[in-house]
Length: 341
Ligand code: TYM
Image 1 (cartoon, rainbow, N blue to C red):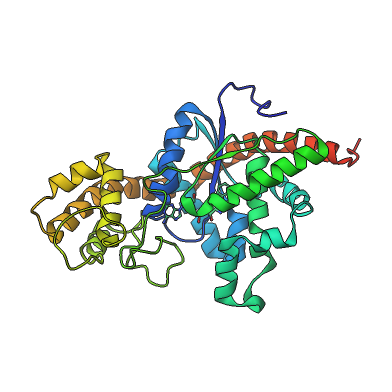
Image 2 (image 1 turned 120 degrees about the vertical axis):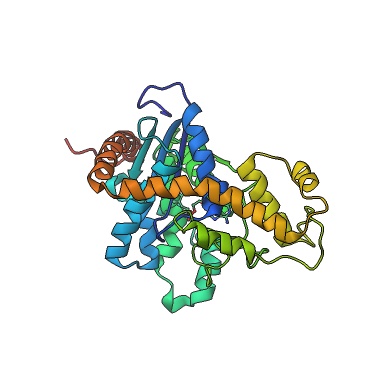
C-alpha cells in the first residue's frame, strides 16, 4: 500500500547522491539539490547519501568516511532541514540491499546492459576492470526509490534512464505479484538539468572529469572558483547570447547565471548587451561565489561537530527504516517468502 507509513497526505519524494568526492559541484546543486530543498516544503521528503553506490569506485575507507560526513554537512548547509526531511545514509537501511536482490531477479541481463552510464563507464575501463556492482548499480537505485513508495524523484538529466528502469521494475513487480509499489516519476527541470564543464562546455560537469579546472565545487575557496570562471572556455565572438550549438560556453554560463539569480535568459542577454565576455564571466563568478561562500562556511562549521551530524543520521535512519522495512515485508509477502514467526 502506497504512502501508508507516516500517514501523510503529502506526496513523497526520494533522491540520493554519491559521496565519491570531497565536494559536491554546481551541476549537482542546480540539477538536483536545489529542487531537494524546495520540495521538502511541499512533500514528505527522503534524501540519502548513497554510500553503497560509492563502493563501485573502490574508495579508500578513510576518504569514504570523511566524504560521507562532508556530504551530510553540505546537504544541511544548502538548506536540507532534518526537521522537515528524512536525511539518512543508505547503508543504515539494510532493506536497500534486500530489495535490490528481489529487483535483480526481475531485471533482464540485456536490459541492465543497455544502461548508458554502465556502457560508458565499462567501455572506458574495459570488462576486466569493471566490477559487477557497476552493472547492478541502477537496480540498487531502483530499490532505493521503490522502497519509499516515492511519487517523485528530483534528479538531473543524466538519471532519466535509471528512473525509467525503476518504473519498469515497479510495474513488472506489481503486474506479476499484485499492487505493491508506487510508480515514481522523475522530477527533472528544463533549466539546470545539465550543467556543463566550464572547460569542455559540451560535456556535463562531472565529479569524475579528468581535470577539475572546469568543475565548480561547493567546498572550493572563493578564489579558486573565481579563477575557474575567469578561464572558462568561450568562443571567439563578443556577444553574450544563448546559442547552445554555436556558443556552448556562453550558453552554459548564462544557464548558471540565471539559475542562481532567478533572472531569465533574455533579461540576462539584455543586461550584458555591449559588454565583453570578460565582464560577463566576472559577473557570473561574483554571483556564484556570493551564493556559495555562506554554504561552504556553514558546511565547515557543521563538520567541526561530527557528533551532531551522527545524531541527525541516527534519527534519519530510524525514520527511513520504519518505511523501508514495511515495504520490504509487503514485498516478501507478495513473493511468497514465509515471514519469520
Ligand atoms: P550523482 O551522485 O552522480 O549526482 C547527484 C545528482 O546530481 C545530478 N547531476 C547533475 N545535474 C545537472 N548537471 C550536471 N552536470 C550534473 N551532474 C550530476 C544527478 O543527476 C543527480 O541527480 N545514481 C545517482 C545516485 C542515486 C540516486 C538514487 C538518485 C542512487 N540512488 C535514488 C536518485 C534516487 C547518481 O549517481 O547521482
